[in-house]
Image (cartoon, rainbow, N blue to C red; front, side):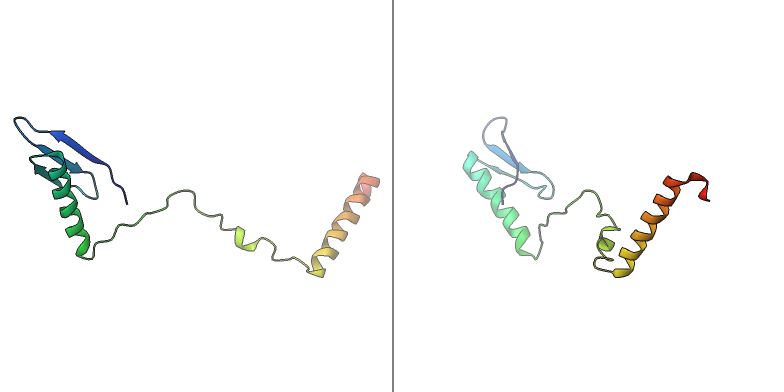
Length: 99
């Protein structure tokens, strides 16, 4: 796993490494590598306590009607219903005053 870390030189001598949420911790060291090592140790200690890092997928909700798609597939009643609609439409097309 990679997380963004900010490393900055401190006034005088040393470095500070900081993580962002969910790892809002920082560590100081005389060198860049020492600051990173201390930060890594703090984050690993936090994760050892049963803390979990999970990704949460955000986006559009699935269409609730999708589960009904195809529910009448191979249903003979639907074929009969479609034929009736076609016949009715043809009747109306042939004679609009049929109603």
